[in-house]
Image 1 (cartoon, rainbow, N blue to C red):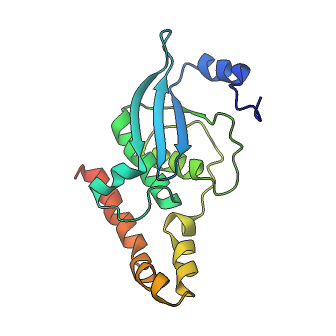
Image 2: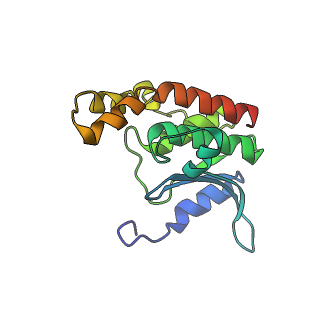
Amino acid sequence: MKKAKRTNYRKRLDLLKSGLPRLVVRKTDSAVIAHIVEFNQAGDKTIAMSRGTDLKKFGWTFSGKNSSAAYLVGYLLGKRANVKEAILDKGNRTLKQNSFIYYVMKGLNDFGVDVHSDDIKIDEKRLYGEHISSYYADRKGNQFSLVGEKIKNIREDFNKTLENIKNGK
């Protein structure tokens, strides 16, 4: 089923039996997208959605699909969703170490939504973009010089964006 990209209806039924809204996270070429979805007989209903491109409204100047953006997407989703708890619907994905899904879950959890997972594994250095900064620190030349200077401020940009989300700016 996984190779054929078909729905595993046994797993889906288990999620639906919980009666909880589902956290659905996907990644596109340009952004991380997260939804809170409820089951409805007529079809699933999206309660709230947040995407990496929404972060620009809050001052985020970096990519909408990195680990930092994934955390902010989760936090913004928590603010928009007005739910107390949700359960992860990972679809056919296998969760790996430092998966962007963990960062979305952590942001949602930090907002105050219980995501029913004890194993949210994130790396603080990745959260603040230090892995990106260290990559560009060693690079020289025109191609990297502008990005290298901008990336030094990713932690400040992250904190400013998070504050703007909290304050609704």
